[in-house]
Every structure is written in C-alpha cells, then in structure tokens.
Length: 405
Image (cartoon, rainbow, N blue to C red; front, side):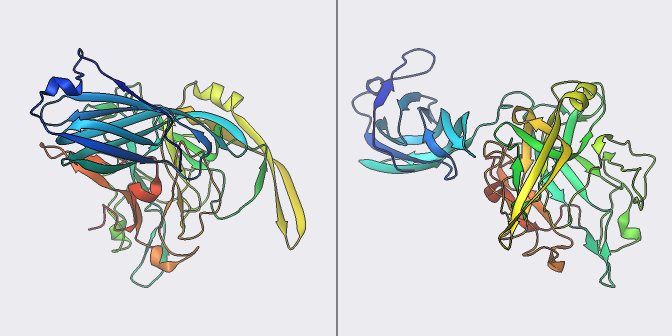
C-alpha cells in the first residue's frame, strides 16, 4: 500500500533505556535509515499509526519513533538492530468497519554506511500476545495414508499443538473447532459474521482443572482420533500410541479403534473431523464462558445462496455455532492448491492458506501434512516456530508428517 509521508515524530527518552542520537558521542558514525512497511493487501481503507522501536543488539540502546505512514526515515548510529513496530489500525472487511492491531519484528538488521533501505512486513497482532498465546498449531495431518495395495486408509489423522513460549503452559480448557465453511465453495451467507465471529461445525475441548496437562516449553501435545499403532494395519501409517488425547465421535458409525489408555477430549458439539482434502480449517483457543452457556448463547442461524447457470438458489435456515474472534488463539487455513476461494475467518485470524495436494481428491496428498516452520532456535536447543497469522508463509505445504518413520 503506497502512502504519502505524513509526519515523523522522534521521541527521545533519556530514561528507561531510551537514548537520543547525541548520547552516542560525535565520533559514532550515523546512518540514514529508510524503513518501508508492507501491510496485508486484503485490508481495505487501512489507516495506521506506527510506534517503532530500534534496539541495538550489542549495546541494548533503544530509539523510538512514530509515523502515520508506512515509510519511516531516521538517523541512527551504525549497528545491528532488532526492529519492532506496532500500530492500531482500522480497515474495512466485507463491508464492515474493523479495529485491530498490526505488528512486525525484524530480529536483525545491519545499519552501516550513509544510507540503508530496510523493509518490514506487518501482520495482525494476536489478542492473546503475552497471555497463554504461547500455544500454536504445530501440525495438522488430515489427509490419511494409503496402504501398500493402494487403498486409502483413514483413522490416523492427528493434530499437534506446540508450546512456543519459554514457560510451562497447560492444555486444559483449550478448544479445537473445525470451520463450518468449505474453502472451495463460494456461497453468500446471511447473516455474514466473519468480522466478529468464526462459524464452526465441530468442537472438542481438552478437559482438566487447569493443572492436569502441562506442556513444557518447546514440547507438543498430540490429539488424534485413534491413538493406536496404525502401522500394524498399514505399514505406511503412524504409531499414534504416543498421542496425549483422542477425540471420539461415538454417535457415528465406523469409528476407528479406541485406546482405553488414552484420555478422551470432550465432544462439545456435533462431530469433530478433518477433511481429507483440507477443505475445512481449524481454529484453537479458549472458551471465555462455561460450556453450557456457550451452547445456549452462541448458536449461529444462517442461510446461504449461490448462483448456478444464472439461477439463484437459497437454502436454510441452518444451525451451527459461532466463536468470537477474540477467543481464537491460533488458526490454520487449509485448502487444496488454487482452490482457497472464500474466507472462513477474518484476516486478523489468518491472512493466508496452506495445502496438501493440487486438487480435491488428489491421491498425491496421502501421507502428507502441513507443518509450521521453525523461525529460530534458542541457545538451549528449543525451537521457536514462526507465527505471523499467515498460513501461506508460516506452514510448509505437502510436508512429510513429523510422526512418519
């Protein structure tokens, strides 16, 4: 998004670790830094007010700036800088006015010479930042596998949640929900609610009193529909006896084998499943009300319409549930390559999409998953996974499942 330079206000703080350029001494070489910020392309009528902090990584000195445009020009001492920006924003999504935040971080930018041009890409900032938002969806293995005889094998789907923080978190109370909307079908929904809520069709909740299921930093919590060693029935499958929890849809026929030694998630609504081509997506978070109140107060009644060969068809009403956007801690938008046609949640939740397979029903998708990328590794060996609220850049499509051996 191109904008004209409106204003630049340099805030100099001589306390709390902030310094002016003159504090560095006249013998310190200075560089003109021009920082250009790229914002998500699908946010209409976007307005920004950036607060940007440059932290010199060797000295710890901080330099703070503000700008109401997506370009910043500043004079800084030469060095290696971490750059963090945050902006309250307003934009239009599906005709509705939305207030949110954008965020970016460049962990290492070398500033040297007379002039340096830097770039940054912003993304919506999670409302759970600094709470227990250390949980992210690490991997979704939804395609199933194929037997040596070439037959599809189901029941070995799994989801891995990951503690991306530096402290022990508890999985108790986390929900997982599958989206109500098929990513490859462009219906018009009435009422449209994506600017405020996510329509969902299946919900499971991890039970516990808040201390039952600890997840250490850099560790995973694995959920599956059948926590057995599937390799015994299909050598191309996975040993899921290591799973922490099963989800069960006992009211449906043809259930995969149950492992009585693995606890079950609470099936809160309908049935929870993963589309084998990824045409439904997954969100994770925490209910901010009791389960009973949720079932009473968060029903989504809707109709849909579409046009086929010039004829408009309308169907409904239908009933599902809706989860407020602010309850969502993480999401992954899955589809098949080239068929991510419709949004299933707001851009503040996820701006992109990832996939297994090149078409609906592509047999090459079997035995694949989508896996979150590693952004960096700490000195003690803990992986920090990438989380920019954009599945297109955060996930590896057509990945080899982490449990494949």
